Length: 298
Ligand SMILES: [Mn+2]
Image 1: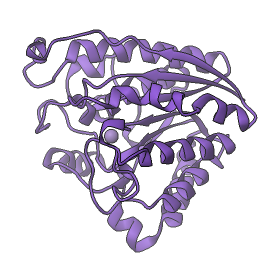
Image 2: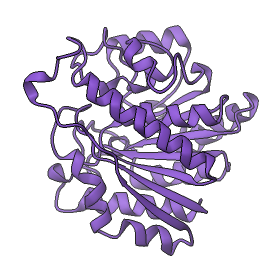
Image 3: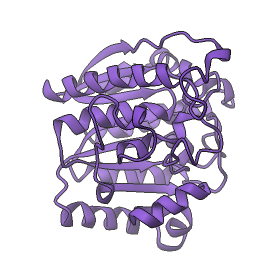
């Protein structure tokens, strides 16, 4: 398969330094070689440009969303690059950077496949809006914006209006939700597979249920967005918003392989690795293992 690696050195969505170093950090530890060893034609498209901005301008455009202007700009460019990659018959592998980039990558997928679904593997919901977000950090808002909720500036990135039907969204590994997010889940009847559910029913049950729903809803294309914080902090400490009681790596890998075995996954994000917060190279090594496992099954 032809794989285009797209680096997004974006930290404005989490408002914390370090995560922007992840794409190059992974490259320096053999990212491209690893993908090619699994038999793919892999191209490194480099890093997207992130406009410089001073901290005192973080609320320049909005008093509820930090760095709105810059994040919209980066996501608009990312969407186009993902769209072009798909149109060119390649698989976009987007390396973050913070999770606000999910808005751009899934928007690019949505232009290519109108009826696509999203699997969001994450400790958090990332479905706050600018009105419900306790922090104003946009990395907590991309998934609601993709469903057409919240700030118009985010909803209308790349193309006007919502990009994905809430029925086609699957949250997995969830264990930290804000009040507004809980309300949105209830209102939209979102498919949420919490850690509590995974602990009681097992990760294989969750994967089977998602496969069933993908089939029932006739979803033939999936964007798979992976936040490193879905994994338990004992194994993946190098990320900005750790939440205890996460997936152990074996469960994580099993779920990822199960989803890839559907052959419906057309693009992926791997986000929120922060080398500055890592214990040695523990989380980086795990991320490389994950990318190895992903590309083995593509
Ligand atoms: Mn996230």
